[in-house]
Image (cartoon, rainbow, N blue to C red; front, top):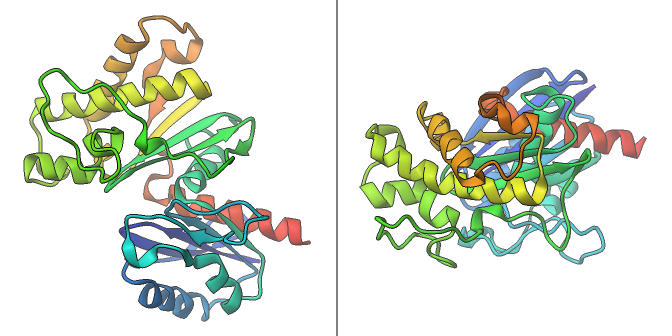
Length: 291
């Protein structure tokens, strides 16, 4: 049995094939270009594989309501050419197999909960800090949906008193994505995040991320927080995030998890494969439901 896995990101698509145990047998990636070109690459890759199901973790916003006329569409994304694109419909036309579908960050949360840093836990938050910021949530074992799905990259936070950067979000300016995403870092400093080493850069970044995490902790009460994405690879970042989270919570919540922030706020155990393994779980679940 083979499961096709797709992590459809705003910057790149990662495609792979997993066996029934979730072992990645093959993996490829290519840049996210216009839909026609990108999806042709997806089709060319999987058409040569004997897959039994597909799991798709997709950048958003996406329509996840089964009763909606636009179920499976990418909705009001900043990527103009992908607005209102029926990505699930394309795959259904090309492949006559069960398809599991969710957000890319929900997919990553699912992967870490089944095989990674949150294995065995029922309440998990996965936040990715890359070009943009997004988060996926597992609540009592179920991925969180609702009116749409979590859009936690756009919560409003308090600006640092010494910060006059207006933020880059076209909708909100100084939401967490506007102030702390990889794109905002590059705009603020005229350098990509991986080339910035000054402590002041990462303390400011941590100040904003920790505010968001405080809100997520108070609202969602996750048993583990996993921070992925390119920006999270800066080694000193999580150290500062933990310091600020402790400061902001100010002992209001006193649980065993929050007494050990080093093991509570962590990087993905699956690394860059979290989304792909989560897509495997989506595909496997779709296959089991079909059978």
